[in-house]
Amino acid sequence: MSPKLNLQTTIAGIDFRNPILNAAGVWCQSTAELDTLLTSSAGGAVTKSATVKSRLGNATPRLKSLPLGSINSMGLPNYGFQYYLDYVTKQQATDQHNLILSIAGLSVADNLTMLRQIQSSDYTGLVELNLSCPNVAGKSQVGYDFAAVADLLATIFTFFDGKLGLKLPPYFDLHQFDELSAILNQYPLAYINAINSIGNGLIVDPLTESVVIKPKGGFGGIGGNYVKPTALANVRAFRLRLNPTIKIIGTGGISSGQDVFEHILCGADLVQIGTALGTEGPAIFERVTNELSDLMAAKGYQNLADFRGKLKTL
Ligand code: DHB
Image (cartoon, rainbow, N blue to C red):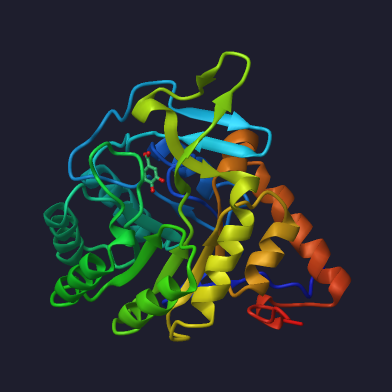
Protein backbone atom coordinates (compact mmCIF):
# COMPACT_ATOMS: atom_id res chain seq x y z
CA MET A 1 0.00 0.00 0.00
CA SER A 2 1.30 3.47 -0.83
CA PRO A 3 2.32 5.29 2.38
CA LYS A 4 -0.02 8.17 1.59
CA LEU A 5 -3.13 5.95 1.43
CA ASN A 6 -5.45 6.01 4.40
CA LEU A 7 -8.40 3.59 4.47
CA GLN A 8 -9.53 4.60 7.96
CA THR A 9 -13.24 5.14 8.66
CA THR A 10 -15.28 5.98 11.77
CA ILE A 11 -18.81 5.19 12.96
CA ALA A 12 -20.10 6.79 16.17
CA GLY A 13 -16.56 7.45 17.36
CA ILE A 14 -15.42 3.86 16.73
CA ASP A 15 -12.41 3.75 14.41
CA PHE A 16 -11.81 1.06 11.80
CA ARG A 17 -8.36 0.90 10.14
CA ASN A 18 -10.04 -0.12 6.90
CA PRO A 19 -13.72 -0.25 5.91
CA ILE A 20 -14.07 -3.98 5.15
CA LEU A 21 -15.76 -6.33 7.64
CA ASN A 22 -17.55 -9.67 7.52
CA ALA A 23 -21.32 -9.61 7.15
CA ALA A 24 -23.18 -10.94 10.19
CA GLY A 25 -23.65 -14.67 9.87
CA VAL A 26 -20.49 -15.42 7.94
CA TRP A 27 -17.35 -16.62 9.77
CA CYS A 28 -18.54 -15.26 13.10
CA GLN A 29 -20.52 -17.88 15.02
CA SER A 30 -17.75 -19.03 17.36
CA THR A 31 -15.15 -17.00 19.25
CA ALA A 32 -12.48 -18.93 17.32
CA GLU A 33 -13.90 -17.68 14.01
CA LEU A 34 -14.19 -14.14 15.40
CA ASP A 35 -10.57 -14.29 16.61
CA THR A 36 -9.53 -15.31 13.09
CA LEU A 37 -11.31 -12.28 11.63
CA LEU A 38 -9.65 -9.94 14.12
CA THR A 39 -6.20 -11.26 13.24
CA SER A 40 -6.90 -11.12 9.47
CA SER A 41 -6.69 -7.98 7.33
CA ALA A 42 -10.37 -7.20 8.00
CA GLY A 43 -11.15 -3.79 9.42
CA GLY A 44 -13.12 -5.44 12.24
CA ALA A 45 -15.77 -8.05 12.88
CA VAL A 46 -19.51 -8.49 13.35
CA THR A 47 -20.83 -11.28 15.56
CA LYS A 48 -23.42 -13.83 14.42
CA SER A 49 -26.89 -12.40 15.05
CA ALA A 50 -27.80 -13.57 18.53
CA THR A 51 -31.08 -14.68 19.98
CA VAL A 52 -31.77 -14.69 23.73
CA LYS A 53 -31.17 -18.44 23.90
CA SER A 54 -28.80 -20.53 21.78
CA ARG A 55 -30.28 -22.19 18.67
CA LEU A 56 -29.23 -25.03 16.39
CA GLY A 57 -30.88 -23.42 13.36
CA ASN A 58 -32.73 -25.02 10.46
CA ALA A 59 -32.35 -28.48 8.94
CA THR A 60 -29.48 -29.07 6.50
CA PRO A 61 -28.60 -28.56 3.69
CA ARG A 62 -29.30 -24.90 4.46
CA LEU A 63 -26.65 -23.02 2.47
CA LYS A 64 -25.70 -23.41 -1.19
CA SER A 65 -22.96 -21.59 -3.03
CA LEU A 66 -23.76 -20.83 -6.68
CA PRO A 67 -21.85 -19.39 -9.64
CA LEU A 68 -23.46 -15.97 -9.15
CA GLY A 69 -23.97 -15.96 -5.39
CA SER A 70 -25.64 -18.00 -2.69
CA ILE A 71 -28.90 -19.03 -1.11
CA ASN A 72 -29.22 -19.66 2.61
CA SER A 73 -31.80 -20.53 5.21
CA MET A 74 -29.61 -20.98 8.27
CA GLY A 75 -32.36 -20.20 10.78
CA LEU A 76 -30.22 -18.26 13.26
CA PRO A 77 -27.89 -20.96 14.60
CA ASN A 78 -25.99 -19.19 17.41
CA TYR A 79 -24.59 -19.71 20.91
CA GLY A 80 -27.00 -17.30 22.55
CA PHE A 81 -26.80 -13.60 23.40
CA GLN A 82 -24.64 -13.88 26.54
CA TYR A 83 -21.86 -15.69 24.62
CA TYR A 84 -21.49 -12.81 22.16
CA LEU A 85 -21.93 -10.06 24.78
CA ASP A 86 -19.14 -11.70 26.82
CA TYR A 87 -16.89 -11.82 23.74
CA VAL A 88 -17.25 -8.17 22.72
CA THR A 89 -16.95 -7.02 26.34
CA LYS A 90 -13.74 -9.02 26.75
CA GLN A 91 -12.36 -7.56 23.51
CA GLN A 92 -13.29 -4.05 24.60
CA ALA A 93 -11.37 -4.57 27.85
CA THR A 94 -8.22 -5.21 25.75
CA ASP A 95 -8.87 -2.04 23.72
CA GLN A 96 -10.27 -3.88 20.70
CA HIS A 97 -13.19 -1.65 19.72
CA ASN A 98 -13.68 -2.51 16.03
CA LEU A 99 -16.53 -4.92 16.73
CA ILE A 100 -20.26 -4.95 16.16
CA LEU A 101 -22.57 -6.98 18.39
CA SER A 102 -25.47 -8.22 16.24
CA ILE A 103 -28.79 -9.19 17.80
CA ALA A 104 -31.90 -10.66 16.19
CA GLY A 105 -34.62 -11.30 18.72
CA LEU A 106 -37.49 -13.58 17.75
CA SER A 107 -39.93 -11.01 19.17
CA VAL A 108 -40.10 -7.35 20.19
CA ALA A 109 -39.83 -8.46 23.82
CA ASP A 110 -36.64 -10.44 23.08
CA ASN A 111 -35.04 -7.46 21.32
CA LEU A 112 -35.90 -5.18 24.23
CA THR A 113 -34.56 -7.74 26.73
CA MET A 114 -31.19 -7.91 24.93
CA LEU A 115 -30.95 -4.12 24.51
CA ARG A 116 -31.72 -3.60 28.22
CA GLN A 117 -28.99 -6.09 29.10
CA ILE A 118 -26.53 -4.25 26.84
CA GLN A 119 -27.55 -0.95 28.38
CA SER A 120 -26.77 -2.24 31.87
CA SER A 121 -23.53 -4.02 30.83
CA ASP A 122 -19.99 -2.65 30.47
CA TYR A 123 -20.19 -2.91 26.66
CA THR A 124 -20.22 0.53 25.05
CA GLY A 125 -19.47 -0.46 21.44
CA LEU A 126 -21.61 -0.73 18.33
CA VAL A 127 -24.79 -2.80 18.38
CA GLU A 128 -26.58 -3.96 15.23
CA LEU A 129 -30.28 -4.71 15.61
CA ASN A 130 -31.22 -7.09 12.82
CA LEU A 131 -34.70 -6.27 11.51
CA SER A 132 -34.41 -8.44 8.43
CA CYS A 133 -33.80 -12.14 9.04
CA PRO A 134 -35.90 -13.93 6.41
CA ASN A 135 -35.27 -17.49 7.56
CA VAL A 136 -37.26 -18.32 10.67
CA ALA A 137 -40.48 -20.05 9.64
CA GLY A 138 -43.52 -18.11 10.82
CA LYS A 139 -41.59 -14.89 11.58
CA SER A 140 -41.86 -12.03 9.11
CA GLN A 141 -39.14 -9.47 8.45
CA VAL A 142 -39.81 -6.54 10.80
CA GLY A 143 -38.08 -4.14 8.41
CA TYR A 144 -41.00 -4.43 5.99
CA ASP A 145 -43.53 -3.28 8.64
CA PHE A 146 -42.83 0.43 9.04
CA ALA A 147 -45.38 0.96 11.82
CA ALA A 148 -43.66 -1.80 13.81
CA VAL A 149 -40.23 -0.24 13.18
CA ALA A 150 -41.52 3.16 14.36
CA ASP A 151 -43.02 1.64 17.52
CA LEU A 152 -39.88 -0.35 18.27
CA LEU A 153 -37.54 2.65 17.89
CA ALA A 154 -39.83 4.82 20.04
CA THR A 155 -39.59 2.22 22.83
CA ILE A 156 -35.86 1.55 22.44
CA PHE A 157 -34.88 5.18 22.71
CA THR A 158 -36.76 5.61 25.98
CA PHE A 159 -33.95 3.65 27.68
CA PHE A 160 -31.10 2.92 25.25
CA ASP A 161 -28.33 5.47 24.78
CA GLY A 162 -25.70 3.24 23.17
CA LYS A 163 -24.44 3.14 19.59
CA LEU A 164 -27.27 1.49 17.68
CA GLY A 165 -27.38 0.46 14.02
CA LEU A 166 -30.16 -1.31 12.12
CA LYS A 167 -29.69 -4.14 9.60
CA LEU A 168 -32.38 -3.59 6.99
CA PRO A 169 -33.85 -5.77 4.27
CA PRO A 170 -33.66 -4.56 0.68
CA TYR A 171 -36.35 -2.14 -0.50
CA PHE A 172 -37.51 -1.87 -4.08
CA ASP A 173 -39.85 1.13 -4.26
CA LEU A 174 -38.70 4.73 -3.84
CA HIS A 175 -41.66 5.50 -1.56
CA GLN A 176 -40.31 2.93 0.88
CA PHE A 177 -37.03 4.88 1.17
CA ASP A 178 -38.96 8.13 1.75
CA GLU A 179 -41.26 6.65 4.37
CA LEU A 180 -38.64 4.71 6.31
CA SER A 181 -36.06 7.53 6.23
CA ALA A 182 -38.63 9.92 7.74
CA ILE A 183 -38.97 7.50 10.67
CA LEU A 184 -35.25 6.76 11.09
CA ASN A 185 -34.31 10.47 10.97
CA GLN A 186 -36.22 11.02 14.23
CA TYR A 187 -33.69 8.96 16.22
CA PRO A 188 -29.98 9.20 17.10
CA LEU A 189 -29.07 6.05 15.19
CA ALA A 190 -25.36 5.38 14.62
CA TYR A 191 -25.96 3.74 11.26
CA ILE A 192 -28.09 1.61 9.01
CA ASN A 193 -26.76 -1.47 7.23
CA ALA A 194 -28.15 -2.02 3.71
CA ILE A 195 -28.83 -4.74 2.67
CA ASN A 196 -29.58 -8.10 4.18
CA SER A 197 -30.07 -10.90 1.66
CA ILE A 198 -32.97 -10.65 -0.77
CA GLY A 199 -35.36 -12.77 1.22
CA ASN A 200 -37.24 -15.83 0.05
CA GLY A 201 -35.67 -16.37 -3.33
CA LEU A 202 -35.80 -19.80 -4.94
CA ILE A 203 -32.98 -21.62 -6.74
CA VAL A 204 -34.00 -24.54 -8.95
CA ASP A 205 -31.68 -27.34 -10.07
CA PRO A 206 -32.93 -28.45 -13.50
CA LEU A 207 -30.95 -31.71 -13.39
CA THR A 208 -32.53 -33.00 -10.22
CA GLU A 209 -35.72 -30.96 -10.77
CA SER A 210 -35.40 -29.95 -7.14
CA VAL A 211 -34.78 -27.08 -4.80
CA VAL A 212 -31.21 -26.82 -3.43
CA ILE A 213 -31.77 -26.20 0.30
CA LYS A 214 -34.07 -28.07 2.67
CA PRO A 215 -35.79 -25.51 4.95
CA LYS A 216 -39.01 -23.72 3.95
CA GLY A 217 -39.49 -25.74 0.77
CA GLY A 218 -36.27 -24.36 -0.70
CA PHE A 219 -36.96 -20.65 -0.15
CA GLY A 220 -34.00 -18.69 1.21
CA GLY A 221 -32.05 -15.44 1.31
CA ILE A 222 -30.14 -14.60 -1.87
CA GLY A 223 -26.68 -13.01 -1.66
CA GLY A 224 -23.64 -12.41 -3.84
CA ASN A 225 -23.47 -11.03 -7.38
CA TYR A 226 -27.23 -11.40 -7.79
CA VAL A 227 -27.86 -8.64 -5.25
CA LYS A 228 -25.20 -6.00 -5.92
CA PRO A 229 -27.35 -3.56 -7.95
CA THR A 230 -30.09 -3.75 -5.31
CA ALA A 231 -27.53 -3.18 -2.53
CA LEU A 232 -25.98 -0.19 -4.29
CA ALA A 233 -29.43 1.30 -4.88
CA ASN A 234 -30.34 0.93 -1.20
CA VAL A 235 -27.08 2.52 -0.02
CA ARG A 236 -27.52 5.39 -2.47
CA ALA A 237 -31.23 5.92 -1.78
CA PHE A 238 -30.70 6.04 1.99
CA ARG A 239 -27.62 8.29 1.69
CA LEU A 240 -29.72 10.80 -0.22
CA ARG A 241 -32.42 10.79 2.50
CA LEU A 242 -30.90 10.11 5.93
CA ASN A 243 -29.41 12.70 8.28
CA PRO A 244 -25.65 12.88 7.68
CA THR A 245 -25.14 11.79 11.32
CA ILE A 246 -26.61 8.37 10.44
CA LYS A 247 -23.78 6.46 8.79
CA ILE A 248 -24.26 3.67 6.24
CA ILE A 249 -22.80 0.19 6.04
CA GLY A 250 -23.04 -1.22 2.52
CA THR A 251 -23.51 -4.97 2.24
CA GLY A 252 -24.33 -6.99 -0.84
CA GLY A 253 -22.39 -8.37 -3.76
CA ILE A 254 -18.90 -7.42 -2.61
CA SER A 255 -16.05 -9.68 -3.74
CA SER A 256 -13.46 -7.19 -5.05
CA GLY A 257 -11.91 -3.81 -4.32
CA GLN A 258 -13.96 -2.39 -7.17
CA ASP A 259 -17.18 -3.54 -5.47
CA VAL A 260 -16.08 -1.78 -2.26
CA PHE A 261 -15.27 1.35 -4.27
CA GLU A 262 -18.75 1.34 -5.83
CA HIS A 263 -20.46 0.98 -2.44
CA ILE A 264 -18.43 3.89 -1.03
CA LEU A 265 -19.20 6.03 -4.10
CA CYS A 266 -22.88 5.42 -3.32
CA GLY A 267 -22.32 6.63 0.24
CA ALA A 268 -21.14 3.70 2.36
CA ASP A 269 -18.90 4.47 5.36
CA LEU A 270 -18.11 0.80 5.92
CA VAL A 271 -18.83 -2.36 3.92
CA GLN A 272 -19.38 -5.99 4.76
CA ILE A 273 -18.67 -9.17 2.81
CA GLY A 274 -20.98 -12.18 3.16
CA THR A 275 -21.21 -14.68 0.31
CA ALA A 276 -17.65 -14.17 -0.99
CA LEU A 277 -16.17 -14.50 2.52
CA GLY A 278 -18.02 -17.79 2.79
CA THR A 279 -16.43 -19.17 -0.36
CA GLU A 280 -12.96 -17.60 -0.14
CA GLY A 281 -12.37 -17.43 3.64
CA PRO A 282 -10.71 -14.64 5.65
CA ALA A 283 -7.80 -14.30 3.16
CA ILE A 284 -10.31 -12.33 1.09
CA PHE A 285 -9.76 -9.27 3.30
CA GLU A 286 -6.13 -8.85 2.30
CA ARG A 287 -6.93 -9.28 -1.40
CA VAL A 288 -9.89 -6.88 -1.41
CA THR A 289 -8.06 -4.28 0.71
CA ASN A 290 -5.11 -4.38 -1.70
CA GLU A 291 -7.44 -4.07 -4.70
CA LEU A 292 -9.17 -1.06 -3.14
CA SER A 293 -5.80 0.54 -2.36
CA ASP A 294 -4.55 -0.01 -5.92
CA LEU A 295 -7.73 1.44 -7.37
CA MET A 296 -7.54 4.51 -5.12
CA ALA A 297 -3.87 5.02 -5.94
CA ALA A 298 -4.59 4.81 -9.68
CA LYS A 299 -7.28 7.45 -9.30
CA GLY A 300 -5.18 9.69 -7.04
CA TYR A 301 -7.46 9.30 -3.99
CA GLN A 302 -5.79 9.26 -0.57
CA ASN A 303 -8.79 8.92 1.77
CA LEU A 304 -12.22 7.33 1.52
CA ALA A 305 -13.74 10.78 2.02
CA ASP A 306 -12.24 11.85 -1.33
CA PHE A 307 -14.94 9.85 -3.13
CA ARG A 308 -17.50 8.75 -0.53
CA GLY A 309 -21.02 9.57 -1.72
CA LYS A 310 -19.70 11.39 -4.76
CA LEU A 311 -21.45 9.23 -7.36
CA LYS A 312 -22.15 11.33 -10.44
CA THR A 313 -25.50 11.34 -12.18
CA LEU A 314 -25.97 12.11 -15.85
C1 DHB B 1 -30.09 -15.61 9.24
C2 DHB B 1 -30.15 -15.05 7.99
C3 DHB B 1 -30.17 -13.68 7.86
O1 DHB B 1 -30.22 -13.07 6.64
C4 DHB B 1 -30.14 -12.89 8.98
O2 DHB B 1 -30.16 -11.57 8.86
C5 DHB B 1 -30.08 -13.45 10.24
C6 DHB B 1 -30.05 -14.83 10.36
C7 DHB B 1 -30.07 -17.07 9.39
O3 DHB B 1 -30.75 -17.74 8.62
O4 DHB B 1 -29.41 -17.56 10.33
